[in-house]
Amino acid sequence: MHVHGAPTAKMQRVLRISFVATLCYTVLTFLAGWHAHSLALISEAGHNASDALALILSFVAVYFQGRPPNDQKTFGYQRAGVLAAFLNALALIAIAFWITGEAIYRFDHPHAIEANIMMIVAAAGVLMNGVIAAMLWGVSHDVNIRSVFIHMLGDTLSTAAVILGGLAILYTGMTWIDPALSIVIAAMIFWSSFGIVRETLNILLEGAPRGISLDQIRKNLSDIEGVVDVHDLHVWSLGSNSRALAMHVTIPDIPPSESCIILDNIRDLLRKKFHIQHTTVQFENAVCDIADTCAALLEADEAHEHTHAHGHVH
Image 1 (cartoon, rainbow, N blue to C red):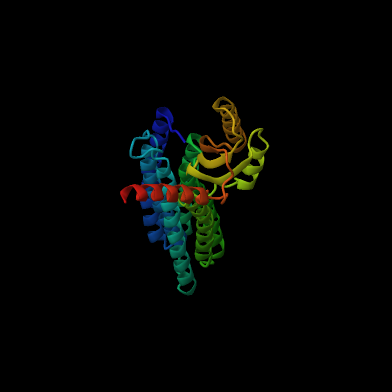
Image 2 (image 1 turned 135 degrees about the vertical axis):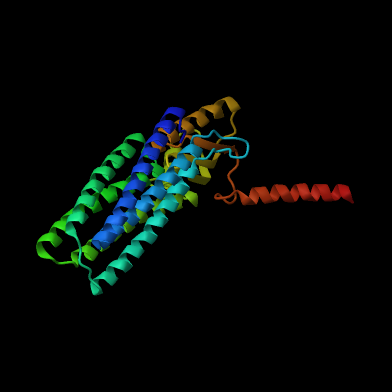
C-alpha cells in the first residue's frame, strides 16, 4: 500500500484530534466512575485508555507507512500499521480479561451506584466516540486504521449500553446490572480484538492473504497459453492492502520475445483477478524433479560445480 502525502497528512490530523479528545474523556470517565462507584464506567475508562494507546500507535504507524522504500527497507514500512494493529488488539484482550475479573468480584461485593452520573458521562461518550469513529472511517480502511475504528465503534455501542444500564439501575435499584454490563462490554472487546489479532498475525507470519486460494491461482495460470506448469508458488501480504507473489513457471523452449507475452498475460491475470501487484516470476524450460522447491536441480548443479572446482585444486 502506498500512502501518499495528502491522505497521510489527513489521517495524522484525524488521529491527533481523536487522541486528545479520547484522553480527556478517559480521565473524565475514570473520575466519574470512581465517584459513582460504577464498574461499567471504570471499564469504559480502561477501554478508552486502550483507544488512546491505539491512536498513538496508529499515528506513528501512518508516519512510517508514508516513508518511501530504501536500500535497507526495500518494501518500505508497510507493516508498521499491521504491527500497531496487532499490539492494539493484544492490549484490548488484556483489558477485557481485567474487566471480567472485576465484574465477577462485584457480583459478590456490590456497591451503591449513582446512575445519573453514569448516564450523563456515557451519553457524552456516545457522542464523542461516534464522531471519532465516523472520522476514522472516512480517511482509510487499512487494517491499522480499521483496528482503531473498531475500538471507537465498540466504545460507542458499549457506552450506549451503559446509558440503558443506568436507566435500569435508576428505576429498579438492581446494582448487579453494572457488573453484568461490564462483562458484556468485555466480551465485545475480546471478540472484535481476536479477529484483528488473527488477521495481523497471519500477515506478520507471511501467511496467504485471506480469500486467496493457491489452487485457484495455479488453475487460472495453467489456462494461459504457453504455461506448462506452476510450482514453488508463494503468496503473502506486504501490508494490509498490498500482496506479493513469487513462483516458478515452466514454459516451452521459445524465444524471449514470445516468453514476454506469457509474462504480460500472467501479471495481467494476477493483477485483475487476485489484486496482486508485486510479482516475481522465474521461467524454466525443464520440469523440476521436486515441484515445490526445485531442490533436486539446485543440488545437482551445486554438486557439479563443487566436483569441477575440487578437480582443479588437486
